[in-house]
Amino acid sequence: MTAANEFIPSGGQAEESAGTEIFGIKLTPQVQAIGVAVLGLGLAGYIGYQFVLPEMTKGGEIKQKIAESKQTQQQLQAQIQKKAEAEAKQEEAKQRRATVTAMFASDASANTLLFDITQLVNRINAGVRTESDKAKLTKFEPDISKTAAPAAAGVPTPDPDILSDTSFGPSLAGKLRRKKFKVEFEGNFAQTRNFTRNLELMQSLLVVRNLKSELAQSTQQVSEVEFQKGKIVPIEQPQTRIKTSFDLHALLPLKQEEKPPTPSPSPAAAATPKP
Image 1 (tube, rainbow, N blue to C red):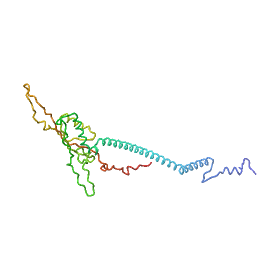
Image 2 (spheres, rainbow, N blue to C red; image 1 turned 180 degrees about the horizontal axis):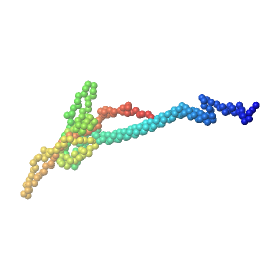
Image 3 (cartoon, rainbow, N blue to C red; image 1 turned 60 degrees about the horizontal axis):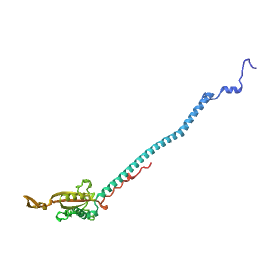
Image 4 (cartoon, helix red, strand yellow; image 1 turned 120 degrees about the horizontal axis):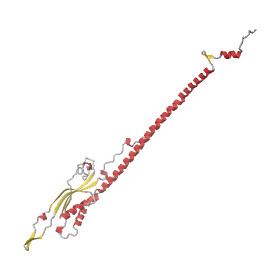
């Protein structure tokens, strides 16, 4: 029998009102939503830690490698530019050396130097009829005072023509050859000036050392005179002759076998870093 105002819930409603509990916490819709959110955050963190973070680390490493590659490329470009500049300077030095070497005498021109100077004297005497008035090359002798130092057994004798002193500067010692001659010339003032001027204009590189000029013995002769109309008139005025002596140096480049070997670049300098 049912009392008045008494309500008995049905079985479904009673189960719903009781609810589900875990560890003493009722799983209401709000609690379930919070749980799903926390679970989602945890899953997202796990995925980020396992997959995203390594990819970010790899990306940073790739950026660092790219930066290092760019730096290496810049270094390579700088090295290439320096190498090009060095090659240009070396080529310029070779051209200057070739220009300077072309000014030197050659073995052939040094061997014909006496003939060339004799031809020069003959040109100076062109038009001069009197033998006593002609310019004369009175001496032209090779200087044989230099002797090569004795070489050790099995070693070739060094070339005595190689410039071993510092008379032309310390930087040229051992880098040139020199042939030395003793020269004497006799003529009047105009002939002497013409001779020395044309000697400087010769194609071979010639250097005059120990130049000495003095009046020749013929100039000291007594003049013959006669008395004409109350005056003493010289019959023949002797020509003033000048005797000039000097050492003539013909500078020649070293022979091919005498040139010092060109230093080869070291392996460290030749190695090129790779990017």
